[in-house]
Length: 126
Image (cartoon, helix red, strand yellow):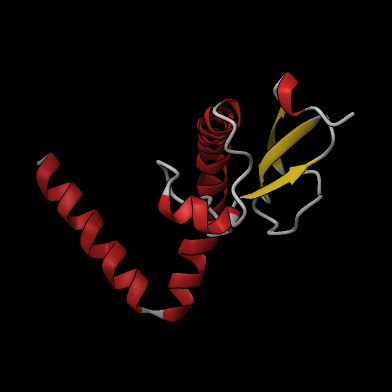
């Protein structure tokens, strides 16, 4: 019985996605769920990213010159956040921040998700 209900649900979803007006409703209904999942995944991803950058910095390698290229080649995760935006990095004299623009796809707004780390002592610019 449960198998049939699940199969029916998938068939109904497939038919609904084939009809443009229903597709828009389905996507609008699922968007808050997508945002909630993204908001829970991104902080951990950024923490892993910052850990990998910390390893580079502590080995004296410095920041990746081409951050997007580093994400593509060397970062252990995806270069895109759940909203299909590239992650970004900002550096100051004392720290650096890796971040995601969040659901609004604009950097520097309230929904940005970021992790900030202090630079290793040997890198601090005087």
